[in-house]
Image (cartoon, rainbow, N blue to C red; front, side, top):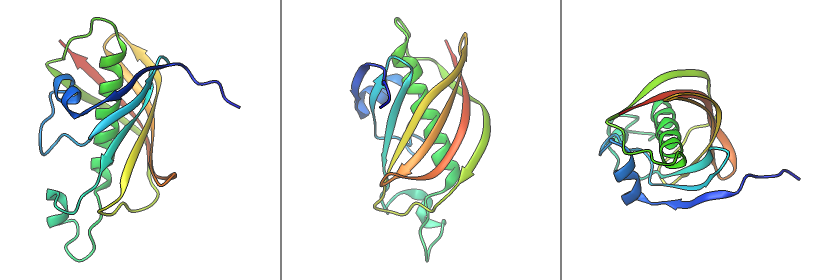
Length: 153
């Protein structure tokens, strides 16, 4: 049995995400974030639908959600966790992607899937954060990576 940190925010819905991150359509890639814990972990949720722009060309006969978009969504989930977790943090002017390490794609994601981005903090220095993420569909890991980002005022 593992001891999980207490939940600080049970749900960050799309309206709160829009108030937190500077990203907008078509580059806002998460629909909500759940169970943000005091240990700076949480789960981003993405409902993958066939009418999204990437499926026009990736790939017309076999739609597969692009892996790079999953990695970007991991960073966005990490950004929401970092911003919401620190008392007094205002919406940053920008969130810059710093690093992607140990990235692996395990299985394709298709329209109709719901991706859960399980993110946990692995380090922080001032405005820079590093997280490990596991993207899961139906409990199976479809992608994983360590991502770093910087929040600017």
